[in-house]
Image 1 (spheres, rainbow, N blue to C red):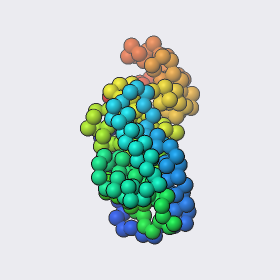
Image 2 (cartoon, helix red, strand yellow; image 1 turned 90 degrees about the horizontal axis):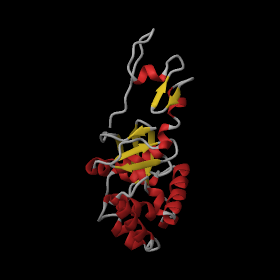
Image 3 (cartoon, rainbow, N blue to C red; image 1 turned 135 degrees about the vertical axis):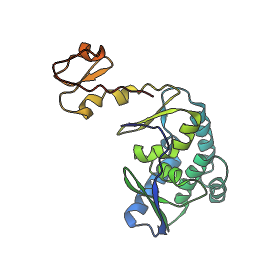
Image 4 (cartoon, rainbow, N blue to C red; image 1 turned 90 degrees about the vertical axis):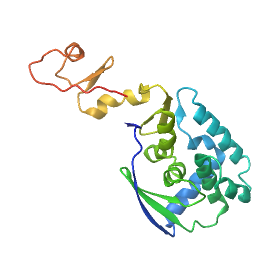
Length: 217
């Protein structure tokens, strides 16, 4: 699970090529789901976030005209960059065969996506691969940085907490298990089995040296 901070640079293999059967099938399946539910393309917000509230309205407007290929082609080339990526994804539902794709190399592995419309590679890949939270969050990095929002990624979803830097419960609860065997959470402190929470919270000396890591947004 990862808090989203500075925008990273991702290496992109720019050569487009014919989509493999497996990838084509997956992209079209996801495009059908996106046409049914535009909120799949959005993070889950724990508070009202105007950016994503307004974006949802734009996506629903596009969804209402999902059967018009000409409209989607125009929507994929102008307006909000995230909305363009959504319109581009819906265009795949009007194609018998996806002719070309690009591959983006990320810290989370290579991801394929269809080249449609006029927007950034991160947004195209993130929206078309909405079921992979780590890839999906890349679609929002530009906006999150500009608006100074906080976003977190778990194994299952992308969560936006607005201006609140505090990690949500879904991020905090699994931390002890992910940090190592025997780790436990006491209040706001996660400690190893040989430590006492009072010692760590007060930074008291212990029989062995210990490391303290603090979350600083």
